[in-house]
Length: 451
Image (cartoon, rainbow, N blue to C red):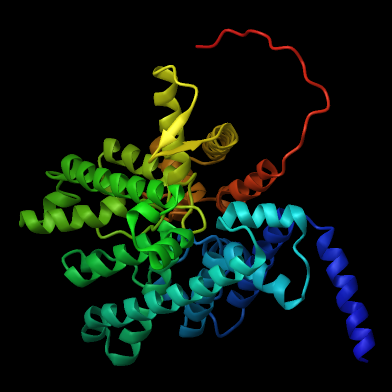
């Protein structure tokens, strides 16, 4: 019997080794989505039976930690259904970074050279031993942050909902916030808590920590000094701080007198607090304390830009990532200064990284454009709402101007595809970019006219 199990394990290992890591991880997401949809169809999961379209859309949104929903969370799920939703969010938020490594380690499957390149690119590590150490660090951070967040949120939710329900809702929102999912058990999101200081501090801190990236957290925990941080960590911390301040200040300036958003609050301090929450939530978190549909068009465009940028690599966030955006800006500045080398914090950034940034940005822009085109051709609605929905789906954010509920069946399929590609696609492209190939033939340079 033991010999038979050993042979079966070896056969499984050989099969896994012949499957590329991107295909395996995409399949993992798809499996989670199917299992989630099947779970939502169980009699005890929902208060009102879900259609297959609603079940698959909700499962896709949860696994990709997006937060877009075609059903009202209050009248849709039982506590079991909410538990299924929370588990899918947790699996989706951590799947690509941890579960693949854990499965390979449990099966004693060697990662191989291409797999090591992929994992090194994603987790910034050079060996499987260090990867396992980072996985342990991830679970420590997740456990501490989510339990501490739930305990703090209970201060606001328990007096309103009672002890049992309040603790459960606090845990659900803590998991949803840390994984940048944006799902809420309240019909109007977190609008009833717009003036609650606990919610306005705890929720943003959870999704900022979850979205900054586990490599950055590991650097901070181990090195503890700015001078010893890696270039990646310095760029992430600086870029994230700049984007947070920009989003906060821009939202406050654009919406200060808007009676549908900040203008409804009399206190300037309350407006500043709400602007803080809404200024940082587009970074793939997806929560709202004001009506998103009530924003000015200029604010909506600003939010779209933040949704497309997203959070950090090896995090629960989506988007093209902060490091990609920063390197793209540095490359642009270097071009206008006629410099042939990129420098940041006393370190140089090589040409392969710049080419990867260009490829990731170009592919992302094309995917978003295609999504907007298809949705505009198949859906009736305001063009800005369509753009906002597609950007939210691609960045796995979850904010919506009320367009999600108006989606037809073809429209739901388009948004599900964009959510899936937004979560898996850029990382898959990163794998192929990380796999180097040496050209056998070298051609003479030619001249082309640009600009």
